[in-house]
Length: 53
Image 1 (tube, rainbow, N blue to C red):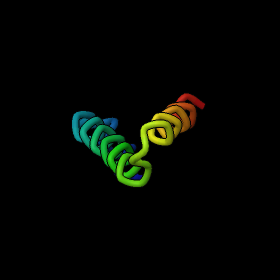
Image 2 (cartoon, one colour):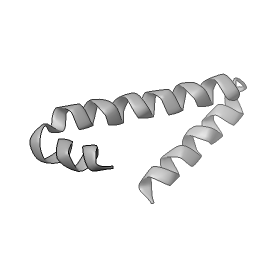
Image 3 (cartoon, one colour):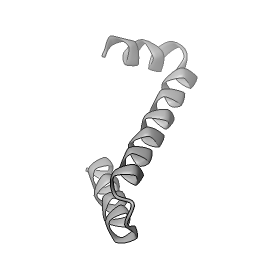
């Protein structure tokens, strides 16, 4: 957790890259788990709702 605070203060580009890669991996894992279209769209809606709240 300390790395995120340090990165946000001194070099936010690394923090941004880590967040984007983490989101990409979550979406990729969801796609591999829910290959049916309706379930994958539902997964994306749930994931976006988690990030909104």
